Image 1 (cartoon, rainbow, N blue to C red):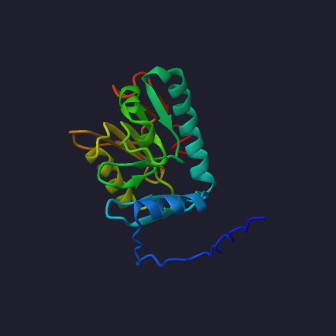
Image 2: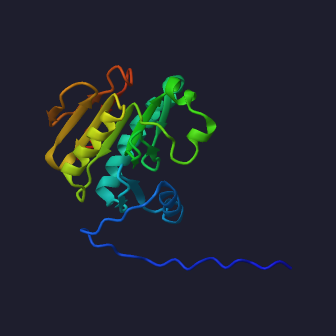
Image 3: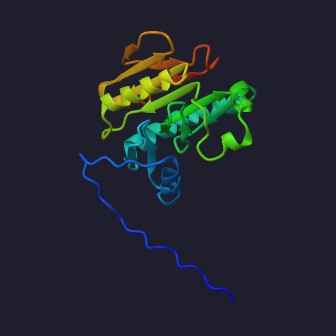
Length: 202
């Protein structure tokens, strides 16, 4: 019988907030495989970002958002591909980001090679949503939204239930802030999609 190779022990490591860990793309991929319960991201400079699981409020809001968005994606499958919060993308600037919801046009998605679609697809979504949870820094989310726009996103929503507002990011335009909105339009990017915010903002 052949010898079996023992798997290395895996230990938990708590990292103080001021300490920044730098990882390569390869190291990030390995970390993501063994930490499937965490949403990991990587900045363009290689800094590792760990997003812990959300609480019940954020989970309920995200489910409502994903359900509405998912129905539109299924009904408009010929237009493109929709993705949930577990999907990460490698942006042109080298960052690996995981929006709460995202969409890529069929034309752009089919241009990618099978290799480019593997793992963390090498593309920036046309549309992204970030839903702020109580533990999220608003400033860091704004920086993330601007990064999406700078890397090719056409339309982005930063939904902030804590302040009852939505920031709309559009490529080549100033940020629009809506106070207490009840509905959002997918505009020309997601034609015919309207997000009902009643349960998303509660």
